[in-house]
Length: 625
Image (tube, rainbow, N blue to C red; front, side):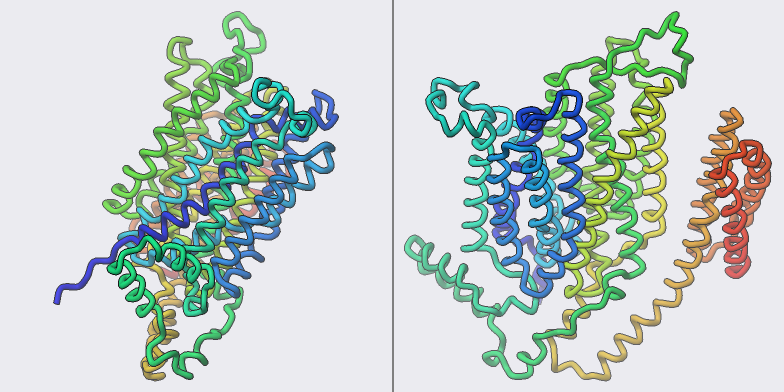
């Protein structure tokens, strides 16, 4: 008999998308009017930008604080009730935010918005549980980012059109004293309607995916079937019955199965597997530099054009502070166009590429695009005026394409790195937290670097800092191993099949444990390599402080040699490892005197750490041989 090919649960994914859609709308609808709201509540104009940043940062920080708690709650109580709770809380808090009349109320409601919603990770977990098959994951995991992209197109339109309705649309709302007293409530009322649709749809039709809660009675589904039964044919009623029978425990829920239901709660060691740690580090760094780029780019585009010829403050190719001098309307057009193109890339190009080349290979390719984009971004201000708009549009499109590939790929890798389904909610909660920390830290760090760089005459400073962050985010990706599929399937089968012999389960656990020794060895080499890579960084800083520009290329070359050597080392091939080790010794030996010349603690410290890394890495190479 031919094996039935797995298929996407299209109906459930559509229902989940409806639940998800309101969140990006409400989160992005504030962007057009948030500066006006900050000014409306009494903040001076010269302080508006600061408080806009603070109000955005508190949302990310509070989300980071509570994301793990929400994820753990979903592992215990089920995905569906936690998602519906998060949607309800977000709807209520967004309405409270619309009533803001003081700065304190703005900041408090923005903080509550992050605290009371951890749905990003939980929805990602539901998709993973709906679609455990590796060949279907690229399509499945591209749906929610697509929903987010569509929401971010509608959100700013809602916010811009519906804020201050009594002034913008006097023929409709001019007589409403309520809207005059609360000029920012209407966009949030519109968003609340979307939330009500999402909550209702989820309550009536969304199926629970947590294994321990699947068989629990869901009164929402019962009500949904009652409501749809009036217009459902007998054939479809039979289909519902078949689905119910498939979800019903055999033998009427035997006592043995009832005892197996309350599975042991996972420990933090189960959550943080070696692969999960690598993916989480990469996820945090990617969130940091992509969010920082998104916050810096509008500022760079808005920065006035600088006169280059005959200007004593300009020393090309590095010392200049010019931007594009474009207005907010032009910037908005850029983002709208790339958002539309991004929808097609997300749903049509990404799944095909991921299926053909593999998720990890796509991520390895795209993770290297980020540092290149960041490195060349400031120099786009130097191109001829006739080519500037085309250049920046292509740059933004390249970054969007890298993000469209990067985040779904890293989500799939994170899902497949989970040791069991019982840790998936917590793991995605941790991912949401580290991502939120990165999204809060990135704009703050690079924003300060932008101001400092402009003051010193070097607008390249924040962009090259971003390039370093982008390069660092590539390192854990190149150490990650792509699993054949979700690693929790076997564990789940053991829970669902109590008739399996204990001896067979023990043999399976022993065979799984047999792979831990190479993993430990790989992690030891990874740690040594991380330290030794600091050699190239210390060398670059040491050389740069003394004014030797060619050394930057040398440092990057040694970093590439490290990656090459590591790949050879991991696959058991030793040829070339000594070459990488020798190159690192040469660079560290030459960088230490130059670092000492700078009399700065950072280059000296990096060089000393690099020496230690070299010793450990050398030991790993010799031990492998």
